[in-house]
Amino acid sequence: GMGGMGGRRGPRQPPPAPKSIAVPEKTRVQIHSLQSKPEHNNCIGVVKSYNVASGRHEVELEGSHDIVVSLKPGNMTVMNRVEITNLEAKPELNGCQGTVESYDPEKGRYRVSCTIGGRAGAVALQPHNMIPSVGSVLKIEGLQSAAEHNGKWAKITAIDREAGRVTVEIVGANKSLKIKYENVRC
Image (tube, rainbow, N blue to C red):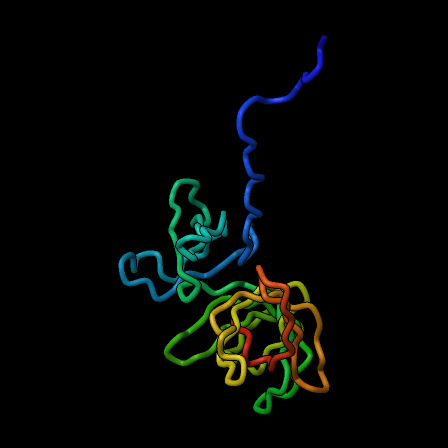
């Protein structure tokens, strides 16, 4: 008869490994601190994929369909939406929504574009002055009591404004943490 139709002979192939996400595909990032290809520093790119083995993101330079660079997490800033908070020098900006545009590693500050008094502007912010949006994927840094999670990617799942903390789910692990705003980096 026709038994076995559609079946394959030979050993079964294991299902493909799940695609590990770090920064999701199509996310815009700003490139910085490259030593080998400094001409790409300050360029904007779009994440194409993540290489689990190398721990690097493949990023295509914006406006170019053929230049792809392989970046370590420390060489890119995710251009996330954030809310400005706890800014003492310019309290009128607290509560404003903005977009992370770049990072200055020497000053440890992010440049965030936002609308200030009806006009487009930008402000330099430290990590503790930014509340990331729920759903953002960011790096964990500066943890003392759970230092083994530093350098890992995490997705923001909740915000606790009173405590000044975000709940994150570590990418690729079934683990959640509640950490200070300053311990997630774009």
